[in-house]
Image (cartoon, rainbow, N blue to C red; front, side, top):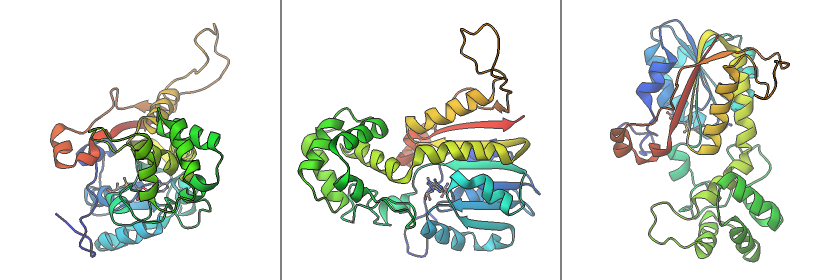
Length: 312
Ligand SMILES: C[S@@+](CC[C@H](N)C(=O)[O-])C[C@H]1O[C@@H](n2cnc3c(N)ncnc32)[C@H](O)[C@@H]1O
């Protein structure tokens, strides 16, 4: 297993063979990895497009970007790494004169390093400040959300972004037990309302997901990234997205479905008035999931869902 210079193993890239196949790698192309992370997919892109393919890598987390830069150093001559949110993917690509590009990968969520090592309050095992920001330039932390939002707002966030059936009771417990300083404290509060009862998934998983999505504006950023990506792909260029929860997967599925249709009028309308034109062809008629072997090797990928399309 390859390790970073801190000795921690690199994040194992999800659905690697499938990503390579859908990106249709070849020499001379230009590719964008919008979620560089530990650079596992980026490394495969650089190798698969050798000797002269170019890669632009983005990550909102500056520390993640620097880790990947070290790992990908042997390819420094044909890559460009930018500390940016993927919501601004189109601006980043155009600013470097790289448009149109041959393929874009978005591997959503967090890397193992961010969850396990970075101690930034993403994990409910973290006795670290409840932060959860991807970038230090963001103003609102998860602690601020947990300690200052009204109970109704908290319940709505936990229900909507966490799909948590106990959202109201959890929000009430959070408000009652303020101030909350660490991720571990929050996890214990959720556990006190919704005890573990032997299930494999920690009871705080959905609440943590909800706070992370709220703090980082994940849903808005994803919508911006999909639109931006479609704007900078060449004809035939590929967009590959891996989502890890159903909220994000639904956004990706609906984007690809809508953009593959010539008309998006409601079905009861006898005549088209929307003037919408198809922009993409969906390449994954069925969502692609990791094989049982991959899940056995790397249980974290069990919820991964890959969808791909090509620009018309
Ligand atoms: C699952 S990891 C990617 C792992 C990577 N594919 C690999 O093989 O190592 C997701 C990465 O996307 C980054 N990220 C999440 N949301 C982002 C956003 N809105 N803009 C840019 N990067 C983002 C995270 O900081 C994290 O490093």
